[in-house]
Length: 339
Image 1 (cartoon, rainbow, N blue to C red):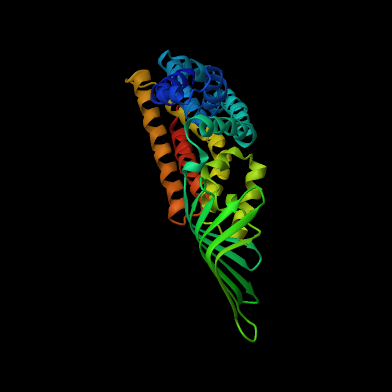
Image 2 (image 1 turned 90 degrees about the vertical axis):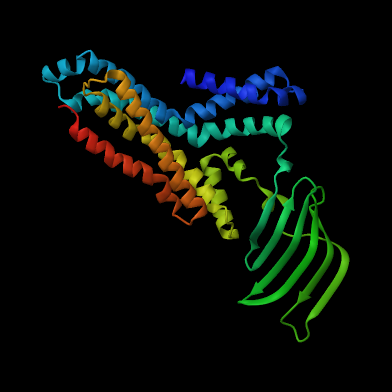
C-alpha cells in the first residue's frame, strides 16, 4: 500500500506541479488538503486488491518453505488454517466499509474543494439535455446549462393536470439570480390551455420565481462522491422522482461502497487457496497469477458498470456480478487446494 501510494503521489506531482505553481497553491494545503485526502481515497479504493496481492505474497512464501505442508501434516485442517485469514479479512472489510460509507465522502469533499479552488473550477463543466419534474405535474427541460454564466439555454416548462397539458412556457435562455432566487427569461412565450379561450403571452424579458435552482440542473456527477451513504440514498430518491437519467450513476456509486469491501472475503479465499499449493514456479508464478486475476476482476467490474450506466443494465446486479462470478471461481479454487 505504501509503495503504491508513494508511486501514485510522485506521478501526480509530476503531472500537476505546473498547475500548483500557476495557481499559487500554498504548500501546506497541497500536502494536507490535497495529497493526504488523495491517499485516503485511492488506498481505500484499491484496498481489497492490495490485500489479495499481499495474501498471495506471504502465503506463497509459506508454501515454498514447506510450512503449509508441515501444518497440514500435523493434523491441522485447511479450514482451520484459513481461520486467521478470514478473521483478518473481516477486520479489514469492516474498516473499509466504514471508510467507504462515511469517512471517504468527507475526505473527497476536502479534496474536491482544493481542486475547484486551485486546479479546475466547478463552473468549467456543462450539462446537456436535462429533464426534471420539479413538483408533481410540473416538468422542466433544458437543452444545456452554463454554470459559470448561470444560464440555462432552450428552457421550457410544462404543467399537467389529470393527464392534460394546462400550461406551456418556452424561452431562448433563462438567467438565474442566486442572490434573489429569481429567473430572468429572455425571448419567452407562454400559453395557458384548458380554458374557454387559450391565453398567450409573449415578450423579450420577464422576471419570475420557479421552484427550481440552477444547481438542480448543473450538479456535477462527480459531486456525489462527497455525500455519505445516507445523504446519497436520499438524493437518489429525489432524482428518481425528478426523472433524472443520472440515477444509474448514483446507484452504482452507492452499491460499490459495499461490494468492494466485501470482495475482500472472496479475494482472500482465492489468494490463500492458490498460493497454498507449492509449485515449480515459486512465488513469482503465484504473484503473476494474482496480478492477472486482479486485472481480470477490474476489467469485469468496469464492463458491468459501463453496461449499467449506458446500456440499461440493472445497477445492483452490475455492481455485484463480478463478486458473484469471482465468488464461484474462489470456491472452485478452494475445492482444489491442498487439504
